Image 1 (cartoon, rainbow, N blue to C red):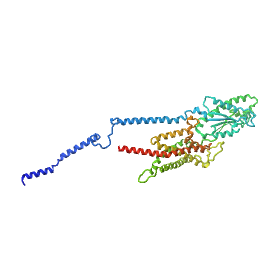
Image 2: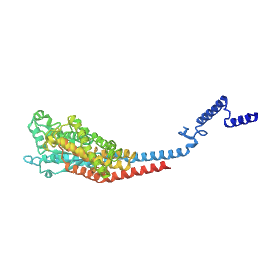
Image 3: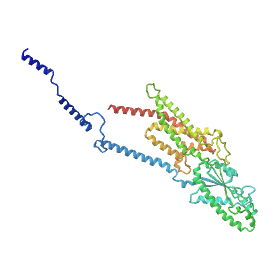
Image 4: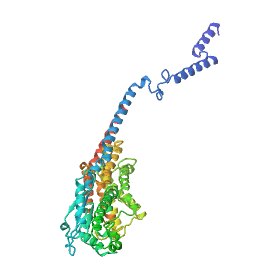
Length: 500
């Protein structure tokens, strides 16, 4: 082959197979690539790759200007809403006791003077009765805080002191001061005859029912009555002692034989027809009922995922929504039935009496039960209906407003029920009279009448609870459909935002 042909062939080979880069050139190129990658990572990807999360920056970084503005508005709006909620809703709890001192006279006390009105004491000029009624009438006209004393004629009670007791048991008044028919006659006979068996406490009676509202009795009624007794016995004792010592016809030996007829001369026997005992009953009719609301409220979030299994397709068919509504309603009330039983069993476990017999209305009785051995079942049904009335309302509101507003509803629901149930509405401003229609007020009243054999309005109490249940039940399917509509709308918005 000629020399030219050989050179041409060599040139073609070089074009088809260019010489490889040296290893040093390859290393330099790799280092240059690594350096660029490192710079890209260090500068947050601005000059490097655009993939990955944005870098962390300071709160006041210029890129967060819009976020800071949105944050400030949302934070201020939330604080404003919560402050307004605190001022408006929590005020309901404080305000229920705001005018107690001015409303003490709403706690009525009957004053019934039988002194010298019945044979064989009609021939005696009464002193004790008229003096007591005059004193209470003067107290009513006094600007000093006092109970609402109401003078009643004996004829209003068939001229029988037992009739006055019945009136107090029937909640006609909070207490009664009864001047016995023989009050003055026995006192005069004691000093004139030296009766050693004379008992000053036989002159008058004070009758009340503590289990009706133990807090009002201990805080307002009994202290006022005790002060009245002390004041009156002192006043009467001075007058009576002076009058007796001036009567020279009374032998001194008689006074020595019956000194109690001279001092204190008279007293007041107290008859608490239904004492508030035992102390462990307190949670069952007061603060423990708050947990009835709370348990009913939180059951929504516990059971909602369980009910949703039938309408969430996860490899299985779903049920029609109207059947889901029925399932949810029946399931909620079935849960209330068992949860109210567990709640009621706590009272039984701590030995609150549930099997004592009832007692005559006008007799003093400790721990009587309104329905004998059936008392626990009635108590359970009160709690069940109460939990349904309270819980279905929570279910409806939770489905309407959603989180986090349901927390505010719970506070509102607790405060309005507590303020109208644990405190006497007779002492509250008239604004709170709506509390008579609130569920917890009727639960408390029904529970008290059952556990203490009080004057019963249990038919009215159950009627109010059934009315709440009926209204909640009518709204329940509407709230379920609203919840579905709201959920579907949120999903559509979320899908649209992802598409954008």
